[in-house]
Picture: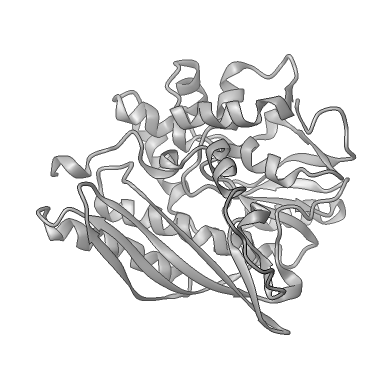
Length: 342
């Protein structure tokens, strides 16, 4: 395997710019005239843009790409594509088309690029979409991802700020991918942890989204580079606070041990710095669990705010589909702290 494709400490969603940096940049950008058809834009901090084209159809537009976090180019392509497709599902949508985004050193073996794109294409097909082309540039290092277009009914969009007091929080995947691959890069991660993480990162959020449409979902986001608490903080607004049940969080095998061994990521510390003032940890929540909740996830699960009466039924259906879903908290009336972790 050529040196350039080996594991990179900045790979996956750990390569994202910190949320604080992004906020300072985005708030200064010119927005231009308001377009009433732009239902969701970047100023909403949602997972994708949504543009209404008719009374019953809106287009969801998103893109995501990053450097490799694993040595296998085929699996890396699968992970990168699964991660990019997730934003469509976080908005409640259906995947339609995708375009490849490729940065690749032209002197490197093109078979590696072929394997990356094969892994990505297979995931788009699994999602029910079509790869229509893309764009590539010669670069000093490998990066790959997708620009994805999906559709959704304008009245059935999942925003991340629609949650209401009393809603139950359901998480569909395990946490700990950042910690696991931080340990992997220094040779400390065991085979089961890596296998568990890769299985999670290559599982589409398609079925979770399709199941959720049967229930009263008030808000949704996918948990990626800003960590569980970073993305939950985006769901908390003036009318709601949140309580997290730390003992109910689904965890990738070994991840808490890696946190105890201080094998965490710089991105996780940026996440902590950005939202820690909004979070109160109960005394029983130890350091490892705190790190897990700040840990940047690559191709993470969906976090739903669901009507309390629907939560158990939705959870049962998600688990019957083979997902490690769990009820991990609830939204409450506004309180002293935005988020309480018990």
